[in-house]
Length: 602
Ligand code: TNX
Image 1 (tube, rainbow, N blue to C red):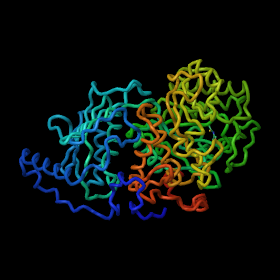
Image 2 (image 1 turned 135 degrees about the horizontal axis):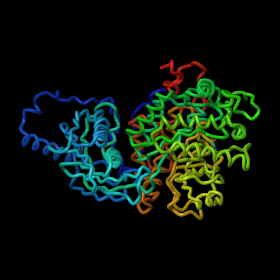
Image 3 (image 1 turned 90 degrees about the horizontal axis):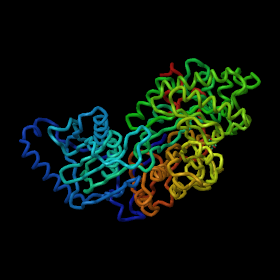
Image 4 (image 1 turned 180 degrees about the vertical axis):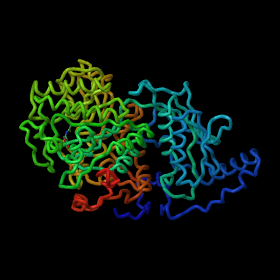
């Protein structure tokens, strides 16, 4: 991927009061010359050290007023109380102190890893007490809890207090601390996104934030079946989710064009079914070790992986591998187009249920989270009782594995099992079948196709994406309310929000990011923030400051004209569409397919 020139021009700033970035923002070209960390710091007395630190901080505050307001956070926090005289400046010898707890310690290590590259500071991490340091992460039963328990039963709320001497994050759980760290990250100067040291006063605006989520399930889906994305790409997407306090990554692992997860008991699913992709690319699949890496990476970022095996339709790749599952017992040709609804596993064949039980059983064993997604969409050729009967058996298999069923909302007419969740992707909020399933006890994740589908184009000239559900600009992604979107639903039935990215036309990490940013942060705010804190005007102002952050982090994004970006050009534009649609020839190396084609390739 060509590296774009990394210079922001603020001379055409649309919002001058947000333009606190230098005219030439080139963090990688300004290495900090640091005093070697020898005995000097250790030789001074603690009191002298504290004095020196506070002098540095006072000077820092005078020299560098914070460029960011305490409320400039996405998603909007529940409550923000600025204290303008209480700005904090991170000193080079700052330490991170954390409650003595393994999970909290992980969060503190994560904070240090976020801050070290740009600051160049050592930021040692140690337990609290005895010596409270300037950055404190405290687990406390008295920490703020939102009114909503998370799916795992824990609260995700946190409190962030910024004073001249300390930045303190307090939470009831490590997850709450983690979200607090993401907020702190947004309150530091843009240059914190640099991967190399930058000369900068690391000012954080003073005050207090108390914050918790509105909905417990906040997610995004990545379709790795239409085009395959390697472990590194998926991990980067997880980072994007975590930044905006999303806590679920749904992986659409199987579809007509490719099967992407190794299954020991049915090995040809991956080795044969995994070889294809939309447009004739080489495909790929995750070994169990690859998948575990993704799950572990996500867990460290407090993101739960939701694996989907799409059944009984969207199964052409499985049928190519195992023709015995096809209704006529004959292998179909591999499919690399983009139509839907033509394939299905035979619901009248008992072998089909061995397949379902084996696949879901192996996936459950690899997946620590509570959810198994069984798809259920667009199985146009399995109708009526044949369809509901199949779904009910699949639901029982999932329940027997001790997991909670998630399915696209087409599974609504099937019988209820405990805790069942329907993922609603309609475009019209009046859905009697789903309303009836909710009356029978189902809960709902909202992915309205015309607000939350990240594969829809932004505008008619968007070079990739679909438009069957309409165009989705940032305002459309932002402007809806999950609690009232479906008519006749109690708000308690809404578990949360998920933004799916289907990848028929998306074949590289840059294209993923282009479709995700800036709409994912908009949907994150829909899912996290209390309605009273939300407004389009406020959101677009806060979001504008994230353009330079994405730029500094090398994240591609769509420079939506609705957002008053502080610099132009703000986005990293896609190369021309013809180039980005190219699929690599079989065997050709590709960064998007770098990690997991065959176990031998590792
Ligand atoms: C519908 S939404 C699908 C997918 C396609 C998508 C394209 C849903 C559950 N199924 O198979 O990829 O449209 O936007």
